[in-house]
Length: 210
Ligand SMILES: Cc1cc2nc3c(=O)[nH]c(=O)nc-3n(C[C@H](O)[C@H](O)[C@H](O)COP(=O)(O)O)c2cc1C
Image 1 (tube, rainbow, N blue to C red):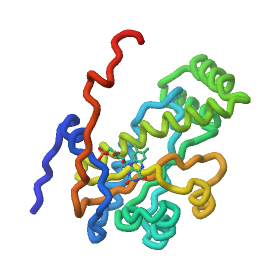
Image 2 (cartoon, rainbow, N blue to C red; image 1 turned 90 degrees about the vertical axis):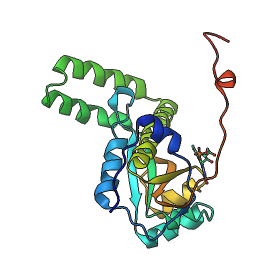
Image 3 (cartoon, rainbow, N blue to C red; image 1 turned 180 degrees about the horizontal axis):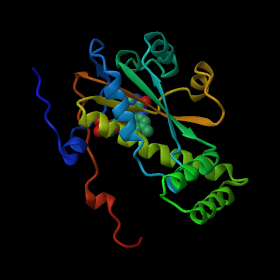
């Protein structure tokens, strides 16, 4: 019997690496996958607009359709689950439902709701560049959380930007509101990730000002 060993946040962050070879025989229980997605969605977002949606591809036929779209990267077929991170280009449309929900739960009052909704409408009006930047920025936070949540639950991931976006949109009938920003494979490694290096803080940190 396997005993579950809980990793600390630091250990999860250190242990996550991009896995490209998966054990195709190891399924991921839907309950575990749902918990990973739920945890991913606890990410912060500007105005709490939650600019992410998850296209969950677990069906083998659909995964095989992804293979040429992902330029033949085999992990999209072998991983039991493939998550397409969809960035919401029209997140302002969520403002009212989100803040009405918060109002119903007693988290905001009507004045706060109306002020925030007006701010959001103002910011997004005639500004597709802002909408796109916000969609990608915020959905990427959920993507990172998804990978860490998966690792915490004993699953490996690989974030992927190497795919034909237009072909993906067409093949999976993705509505114009959503921009596929990343693909993440989830499963159990059959071969460990290859080691990678990182810049040291001396190269990364600028103190106070350039
Ligand atoms: C936005 C993004 C796109 C990536 N695209 C791919 C990809 O298409 N295929 C792939 O094998 N790895 C891809 N990677 C994984 C990177 O190569 C990997 O994160 C990096 O080399 C650091 O290694 P590590 O994740 O194992 O620490 C991508 C990573 C990110 C964040």
